[in-house]
Image (tube, rainbow, N blue to C red; front, side, top):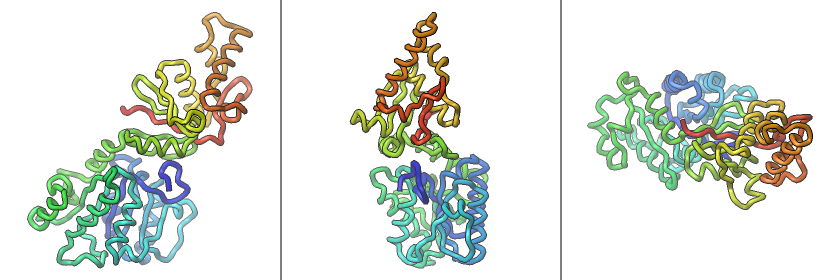
Length: 349
């Protein structure tokens, strides 16, 4: 399922794997304190045993953090309609099979994302209690599933002597115990700012979609661009000096993913105004506003009307809108149709 406009559970750029309810609660609270939007970027894989406490905790997380997804063992008690769409039952084999665990976690993670995993996962029965740190092998396997754009991996530990006990194994697996292990409740290296920093570097831009509450993190990788443009009818990518116009309306007409315009061109300014209006559920861009930009300085009457009409005709030609059902005339204003999936990716700050 695409992460751009999912109809249900979808891959996220942050996956948190924990086996204790109170640790999940602490992590989510810390992430929200660092950035209230972070939980909406995440999926929690809760490996605590099923039961009333687990069900109550999952319900609480989903209600507190809008947009958060949770995968956990099924238990008794239901969820209301909206939170239920953000919950997924874990297959019992996740707890008994390393391959099923890795395929499940890998399927929840976007390419180039971040896996935040507790090292000691006591509920996984295929890991020896005496060699609890071998969970790092699981993270490496998940990373291998996304080899084209491997995720970053950070581990959580409350073991003060972790450098001695499993530092060598971490190094052998390609991880640095000084960089990739975050001791829990360490005031000198709190978890949330580190997580936020990794995600900001990996996904420096945010996609806003008309009608969607939460902005979606986006990388500069061409793979993200292709997936967004395959899902949306029209999307603007804003650069410092250029604006790229892409989406299904462009690719269907021109057999290419996007069109690059000068950011200060009249066409670019008009597209940005139309997209901003659609994102704000506005009444449309007034024709008089467009006319003041595109018509000669002293134009009035028929000359002004013709200048506006020519400009709108050029915009419609770009997207193959011959029947005028995509770019609508609404009285004396123009707006993008409600049926269109419309998005905006501002330039990196």
